[in-house]
Length: 81
Image (cartoon, rainbow, N blue to C red; front, side, top):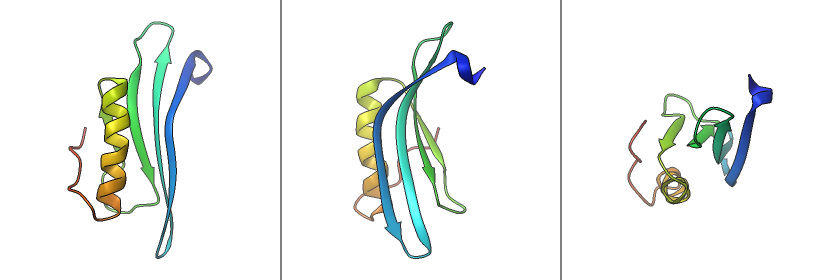
């Protein structure tokens, strides 16, 4: 199944935090039979939302920035998918 999917990278950031690093990746996913679906994945957090789903490219790019703002304490937590 994964070999039939295409990933479209949008943004990739790494934050250094006490206890390790936090990786934030936003990308589009498409298969042969579906339209592109956009997601932001966060790894390195415990007991927190780990992904967000976006409807369009512009929302994904903006959502990635909102997730970074939330993680760095400069904004509210984005809506969870």
